[in-house]
Amino acid sequence: MVFLNGKFLPIEQAMVPVLDRGFIFGDGVYELVPVYSRVPFRIDEHLRRLERSLAEVRIRNPYTALQWKEIITRLIGEQAFDDQGVYFQVTRGVAKRDHAFPKDVEPTVFIMSNPLVNPPREVVEKGAAALSAVDYRWLRCDIKSISLIGNCLLRQVSADAGAAETIMFRDGVLTEASASNVFIVKGGVIRSPAKSHLILPGITYDVVVELAQAAGMPLEFAEISEAEVRAADEVWITSSSKEVLAITELDGKKIAGMEELVNVVNGKKPGEEIEVTLLRGGDEKTVTVTLANRPASIE
Ligand code: PMP
Image 1 (spheres, rainbow, N blue to C red):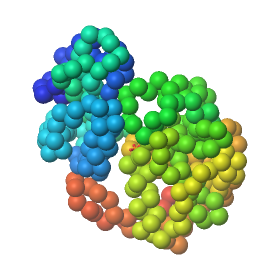
Image 2 (cartoon, rainbow, N blue to C red; image 1 turned 60 degrees about the vertical axis):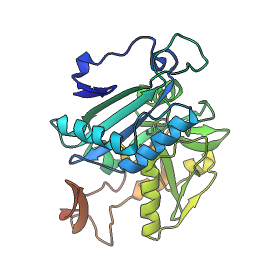
Image 3 (cartoon, helix red, strand yellow; image 1 turned 90 degrees about the horizontal axis):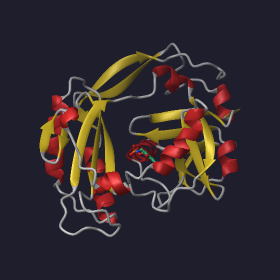
């Protein structure tokens, strides 16, 4: 069951006219909200970012935040699975093809929810490989535009090589990855590019920043050179579906600090038990887990 322009219907019946400006020009914006145990994570933040993207491209937001939430909640309830990724997009609508904006056109709204696909446990524990590329996208990467051809081409660079992501540099400076934000750690300091028109303001980026600040970890928003990324102790990518994922290899070279990475949390070592708080069904629940063994070096 999906949502299209006010109606809930099976995806096979959801049709958009070929003159929709989303189809013709990629003229629209989107969001993807992760849903854990049927509870959307940071929905208000996603709706605020949608509002901002819409305002930047001058498309009217057809719904209030409350209406968006009602529709999304109903759609989540229609699915047979608990952990979901709710994708929603708004295009400028259907009009005769002309670059200039049409007048009095209703935006097209499409929402679907799929099973949430996070990286497999093994990849989370061992880390993933990435490739680098020159960031040749446009200069408004802060807008979550559905025109993703640049991101798709750049993602394909790493996909062709069987790697998880493409980390991008503009004029030798780190921007982000093709569908995620990037953090590095050097000498115990967490560093990431400051928000600007060159990167998407990630909701997961904000979560990482909040957690680091709450834990009193040194954190710096800085211009990070390509050389600094390659010499980093750790590299992480963040996104709503990848959550926080360690990059242990860049362009075939190991990220230095990851070689000796040992799983130590609050002074506990692999095999020991720790308590973690999870959000389940909207409630916080404390469970005891055994720390996994991490390889002393990453193959
Ligand atoms: N940058 C880009 C280019 C992205 O496509 C995404 C994922 N949509 C992100 C960063 C991460 O954003 P978020 O944490 O909100 O998923």
